[in-house]
Image (cartoon, rainbow, N blue to C red; front, side, top):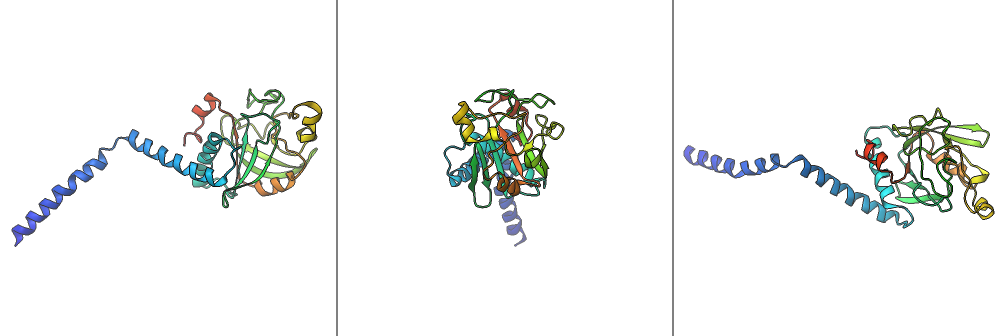
Amino acid sequence: MLKKILTLSLTLTLAVAPIYASKNSIKPETKKTETESSFLLYSQNIYQKINDNDLNFDAFKYALKGYLKLQKDNKLNNSKYLTIIDMSVSANTKRFYLINMETQTVEHKSVVAHGQNSGSEFAKRFSNKVNSHQTSLGFYKTAETYSGKHGLSLRLDGLEYSNNKARERAVGIHEADYANPDYIKKNGRLGRSWGCPSLPKKDYKKIINKIKEGSCLFIYYPQNHYLSKSKLVKA
């Protein structure tokens, strides 16, 4: 009887061993590829639920990746909202997206200004330098509100090498006359800021009150240097 048990035990061990050997032999590159494929499917699923064809999928995909990383690291006090600003399109189009991640819907969508030295109708140059008057790319965390020369305003804290001087540069969200659609009718393009993502007056207070105090905001542009260097994009 003991011989039969030992024989059965050995048979099971030999049968299972190749399975463990197979798992341990999976290359890191393969695991990474599988993870990236899973994330791509996940991001595509949410993107389809959001159902807004104007939202650039690459911008959303990168924003979602950083958002999930920050959420996992408990760095978001307000994870209900994800804000995406797509600087790859014309300033005359609605490129500010406020996404409710709980309902997976776009709650607000509007035009938004870029820095005056970043470009005219299209933003093409970006900087983190003080007094550059350019937009800074990357992930931000919203902070406290304050009352400034533009009324209610929202401070932003840059989370990356590309925007970590945001507070020093006084980059924040506020309303501005030059960020109004009527400005486009008169001047042919939206007005520009000194680096702040300025919004139209309509609904801007609602937007600020929703995303304030620790939500994720992502300013996107398909710049190879940024995309290859950003730790959050590559998370």
